[in-house]
Length: 112
Image (cartoon, rainbow, N blue to C red; front, side, top):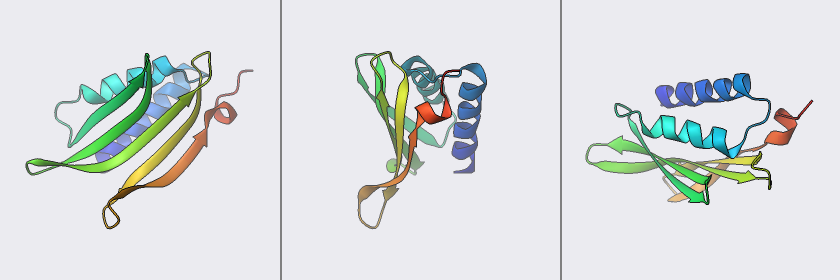
């Protein structure tokens, strides 16, 4: 889990340093980087609407199975700017996704 959190934090830091405004292209690039990590303890799956990544699922490898771990939902403005990211974690006792965090990105990445 520490590796995943560190990896996600590094991706967010890279996005912040490289662009004032997070776009669907930036989110897609982070997704492509994550799925290319073959030695990871996690597996990633994405749902797209057109070229925009709208949902990313993270599964943890456990023996010969994949266990649901995290889910991220992304919404975009018409110009492709990321407007909202919702993070969910898998609640194993209830067997459902539970909301963990909502970030409205225009507040964080407002154009100057």
